Image (cartoon, rainbow, N blue to C red; front, side, top):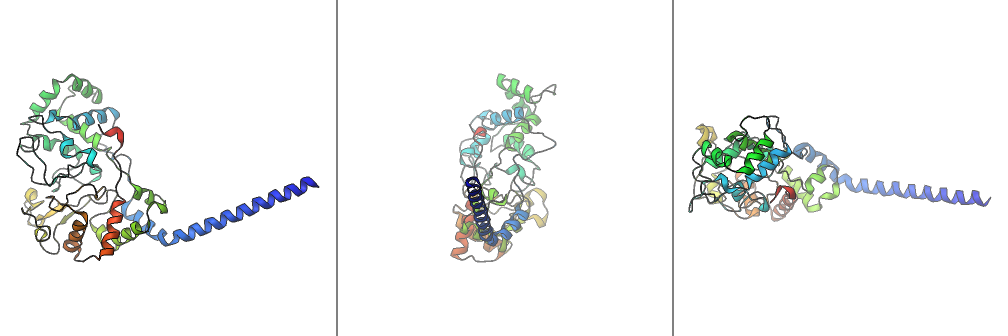
Length: 345
């Protein structure tokens, strides 16, 4: 009889606990209801961030990444050995140098456009502000031969310099073991590209997209909703939150009137010479945007709130209220991730 009584009590406790658990889950689900639709909508707009930006033409291997990392940080690729990829795309400062335009290899020289971040860049449809290269592999070879940026005279000079370094003799042979002559300019580009394909920076926004409704607070969710409703997603969608479309800068009025740019840049037109490409640029990724100032192709605006107001006016013809601006900035802050420690020096 005593055993029956104990068993009855235990069963009653279990039943009570299960009831409380279900009631708690019900309350939690009811609390989430307000944002479930937003989560679902955001997932359809931004998708899922991959761990690596794969490329079938340049499979990412550990040996390539190790070589690419070494090359990325090595000033040997510049004529006077003053510049590395990391000089303008510093991984300690979110893949940028925070200058309007970057100093070149020769003292006193500067580039003509703001250096965009290398973080998540492999997810973009193309590279450079004018989209003149298709991927990070092709992009990696450009600055090395640019007379202002890194100043090397030709590909042969680069290969000859690398070939004299024992470390690179071994690393290229390992990374490109099937090649008879592994140290080539193209393989240099492939190695740096493979390294950059791992520069992916997930943030708490990705946790939110993955189903964790509590990953974003109320004002960040408000900002996300505004970001969608106001039309920012027309240029900043996909898993990189941008980088997947070309757009005229200054749909409503000339951009330089708003940014106070000193030099008028004709954008993609300088490459294609098509009249329709005047003032057209690749939309930048907004991941880590709070860290990658100054903004725009010429780095003419230093403050993010000012950049957001300019974009709202020039691209959407709207004036944001102080609260709307505050919420959108809060959302943009949720896009800040971290570079994997093993990819830094």
